[in-house]
Amino acid sequence: MASHVTFIHAADLHLGAPFRGLRAVSQSWARRLTSALSEAYDKVISAAIERSVDFVVISGDSFDLSETSYSDYLHFVTGLQKLADAHIPVFIVAGNHDPLTSWQHDYFELPSNAILFSADRPNFVLLRKEGKPLCIVGGRSYFNQTWLEDISIAEGITRSSAISTLRPLNPDVDQAPFAVGVVHSGLNLDPYKAPTSPAELLNADMDYWALGHVHMPYIWPNADDPRIVFSGCIQGRDIKETGPRGVYEVTLRENQPAQLTFIPTASVVWQQFEVDVCDCSNVLDIQNKIVRELFRVNGKARCEEMISRITLVGATPLCRHLSNDSTLEDLRTSLNETYPSFFCDAIINKTTMPLDRSKLAAEGLFPSVFMRVASDQQALPDAELYYLEEAFTERNLSSLLGRIKDVEELASDAETLVLDLLTRDERS
Ligand SMILES: [Mn+2]
Image 1 (cartoon, protein in one colour):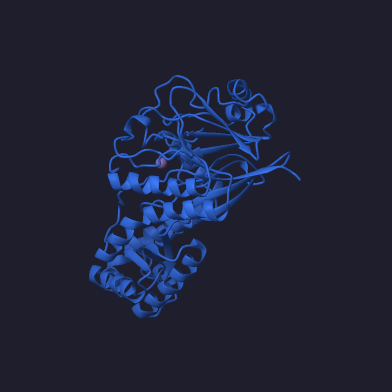
Image 2 (cartoon, protein in one colour):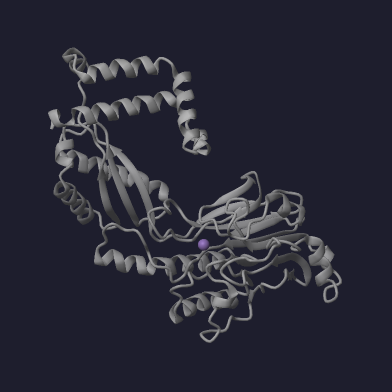
């Protein structure tokens, strides 16, 4: 029988975190959000138990620090105890939000299946199955909120130092087929949070690095060979943390790439999206189109309850009604009353009045001159790109140049925007 190990990689639970950045919230949704984080944590625990995994790792930021209460600790420990009852060990590192110095041990004691790694050195554990060595787990915690060491947080977390550290008590440790590293690090993505490099981690000869800190799932070098992975947070906490959130179930087999299964855990998902209303003939039509979009977006979110921020775009004569705040607010209220599992916190109007370009050209006024200049310019995309390069460099923004993908589309959007501003008063 080929040997394998399966575990849950979770990170960034942020228990106790407040929800931020909502433009509007109803009382029932405020209550809903208060329970969303702890529900997501419960889903992590039940996923581990249902799948009978060999162990669980939590790669930092179990708590959000500023708000951690007795009830948050209690909830956390209760989950760990459920894993203990199912004989599932848990390996935890502390992150920048919950460094070791912030853990209030007067409130709780970790159950014996849970190991919180120290911050002073690399920690190693050997996991056995039926008496035989199965997997080495190595990790190191944050001590303070800032990683001040001039060494990498991952330094010394290698298969060979794990073997030499564990050998005195485990003479057979070098027979362990698997090794997993656990740290809370910005990797090469956030230079301010205990950064390290993919090359350093790969040199450590671990089979899988379970990282925390980046709140989006992120896999390096690629999904076919996941060696260094951020599982992301278990529940989005504001409108910037859109889309599904969850944990990975990881299976390691000898001489094969790690196999990952994403398990969604968010109990409320956040989404921001645009709805093009140019084909809607009245405001009710717009409402119906928004509803269709809400269901379409929710279909991909893998979570029933959803908070959304919706931007209306497109050219429509209804623009004049949509620029009235009370119409937008009525529309939002109606949406929220009709579908209680969706909450829209804001509708943003970016629609424009339709432009009659041939009429503008025939009038021969300033807009027609502008259209001629714009069309001459658009005939020379290389010159436009050169102009942008100069302008960005002058303003020290050359790093943004890589984001200019389609200069023709940019130029056409710019032309429409200018024409809209030039003619808005006449059309409304
Ligand atoms: Mn975090």
